[in-house]
Image 1 (tube, rainbow, N blue to C red):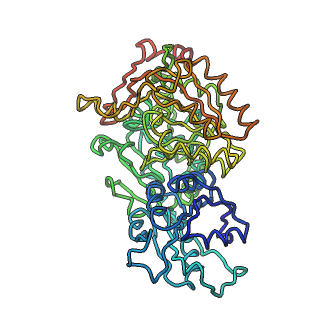
Image 2: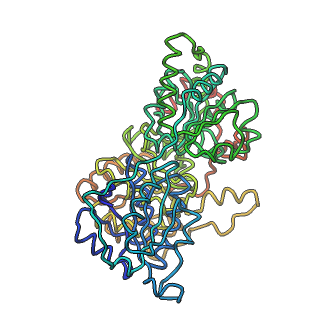
Image 3: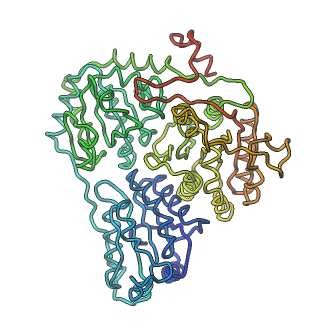
Length: 582
């Protein structure tokens, strides 16, 4: 692992994995952070990988339930093409299939949610299994690997020369010049083209190439949720996000106005597209993806290219630059101006003054307070959906998000993993109260290992997204979290909101502030930053929201329900919109 570049591991020791821990202790080159839950360790590994290009997070657990606990992390990593290495202990080989204590066939359980899941049955295979694991994780579409190590395999002695060990060459498919020229010909012949930038652009560390290509072609870019940050939100060619939930009004409108889409490193995920019938109608598509079988999986594009995003974009830039010098590129100025006009005017209202606060105002305040260097971490729920609609991201790997799996509880451990990967980064996590409660115990890890970050908890004491979706069933059932907490006074929390997060957070060794009004948010953030500097622990800012606020979403990109409509005067009045934002 050291020769493959591993410097950090997350995990929970146990009897069946103690030989590996003994080796970690003896070697001393790989630091270890002790999680409070093994699932938490897997999400820390995810955050660690997602934060910095080239990282591979490692999570370690013992036999039995440790492995099954990490399945959610493996699923999350597999869904988003994130390489993490999960190592589990196992009963001795002679005790397998004899219902030994905590012996489970984790190799079989993990196969559907990994690129490779393997039990090492011969001690001499250990170095080569690890060598193959890193090769598999890095090659083609990235993804997680699980290695299961029986106790006696860990204890065996073998011949191995670490000094001459070398990583296997990584395989990545590459586009040909002929493919790029054909794609560019199709793109150049269109009138209203868009580029959809997916998570593969982030994974390939190709954001600068994406922006350069878009600028040469003068074509607007719509990032997916996983690709957010590949082009800065304030870039003139950033046209907004498209989708059923995590989208902008102007992004959906621009997609519907387009006649051609070049997708790079994206999956055509259903939260982005809605039905293909609506999404594809009236427009042609090119799909560039590192995984050949991904092309045509959701719908058949007009042209497909199997290629790593960076390798494809390098060729796109080369050919586009030549065509530009020859005067062969179409003039897109009118189309770009039209997209920019939508971006200036088709906005959702945020400037609410009611108390308890509406979430829209919270995100407006966060935009004003955190600046362009902030790195957001979030997973799922109305908090994440509204965050994607109203926050701003300016750099790649500064929106760390669990895109497809969306497991509740992901945010705290993932934020800790991001913080461990880059101690200099300004990390701000975003959770609803239910996500926050799922793995709240991991805050103690941040306190113990000095991993400071800010965690904004927007508390409406509801399973808000499920409550909103239950409207279709005309019910509000089993989604309310509020109760009168007998241990809490009114001056500490709004009565009826239930859990006193401030007390819980303080009990876990961290600091917390509760906020009721928008004018309290900026001072709370300043206080949080001061506490992080002084105590080196996570700081939670809990913001009390009104119980019920519906967030814009819909069944199709042309049928998004805007629950909080803009005033009519804002629709065609950029100066009024600018005043509202101020």
